[in-house]
Image 1 (tube, rainbow, N blue to C red):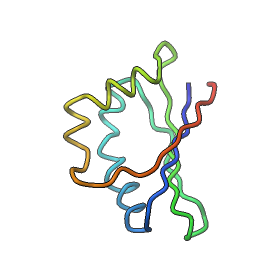
Image 2 (image 1 turned 30 degrees about the vertical axis):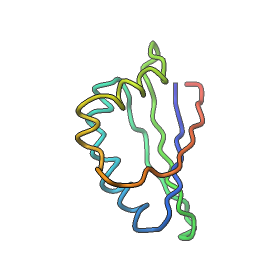
Image 3 (image 1 turned 120 degrees about the vertical axis):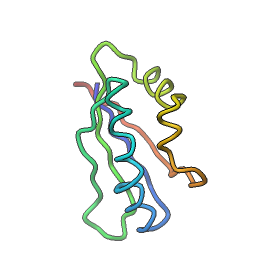
Length: 96
């Protein structure tokens, strides 16, 4: 199953940091949980502060369970940015 996740950040600096620093820190941990990142995108409009992330789960896995296990893992907690505000996010599951 594929999932498109969107994050709306409060400013361009936050968007760039989340895209260029925060998300790449999680690439290895995602793979350990059977997830694959297919892309990170921003809108062409510089005033649009939305980050789009497309990733997938192994066919046998339940996305909610995998995300809960990932979020509670020590590795994920260590690569998260302490003290930063969590951006607003939404998800759109899509069939593979």
